[in-house]
Length: 474
Image (cartoon, rainbow, N blue to C red; front, side):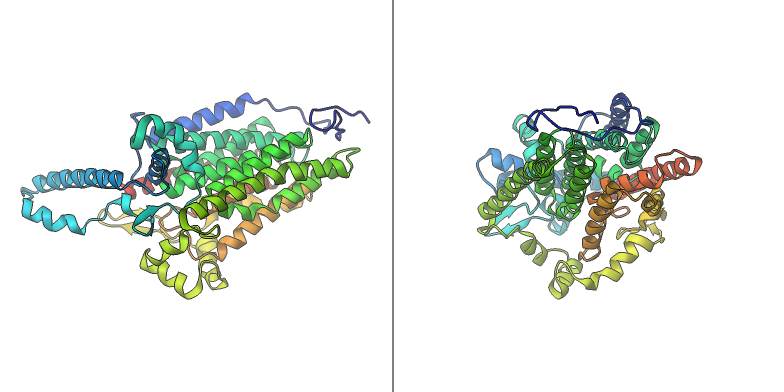
């Protein structure tokens, strides 16, 4: 058997030969797909103007601004300034509405209305010792630092989210390209493009990527780095440096959204599968990759613990508990009675994740819309039905992806919330890159009439969901 040397393994790595029928898939279709999907994202995010403003909840922008001013808590002056801008815009809109009704908004009436308003900007912070902190991971704010340094608090989280989302679509294509190279699923370039489009426009990633907003940007950032990690890990049969990149990317995903850790079972099983398929790879081969992945991941963990210590005085306090105690009553009641994770939540969550078919009428227009607690994942993304067919291909990739996705889903079923307010089940984005691998396996790598129809239907449904979500937000 021929061996081919690659850097990073003392000049030698012997790999199993590629399947004879599998030809290399070019990169350019993925680049074109990501560019087109990215154009859709940026068009929607800017309202077609390509002039990007901050979202209604630009919390990561404000956190980056605070860091640039040498503090961890958000600047009070910025909160007051942005809140006053909200009041001015709200008053202008109210006055326009009154004029259409032949009325006039008096100063006395406005002074009665203003104290009843809560600006979106003041929502969902952790308030400790008279200061406002974010309870989210720091990675989105880290990515925004250069942009905020130039544009200030007017930096657009919508623009950043759209660009990251487009990058993730490209990484999905590259990930599937590696799956084909490894011979795990006989994918064609067209199938890789179709599945990248499915991820970008046929899942909850669509509306999350165009909204900006603090929670959604955290998820989009985590999805970007998780997909980068999976792609790099699948390339680690070439050199151990790819495993190090995978570990760093997985750590970055955790610094965006710590729940991504539950996809972790994918990693050891995938590394073991790669080790087994690589000819003449001894224990040293595996150890290099385990350490390559583990060291940067451990460093990311240290960064998170240090960040918690700096904000809240304890490495194990992330601010979530303080936020929940002062949060929305329905969430606070569940948290106080059952905690963040509990089997008590499983029946309710299983209904919203797997079954809920119900739509609602949105007042005052009575337009048909989705359930804000979530609708069945198989109604929102019908192509997910192919996951059930994945297990006909009993290989290490399917096993690894199923364990990672299954572990993440089990955690979500025990979580105290389903993502209110959301179209579909936005928390599923944590495991969606792994679900795409399972869909590819379930399709047997082939684009048939059925698979094309389900992907098309998924795109249409999520296009409608994105439209409805934006209508109800604005």
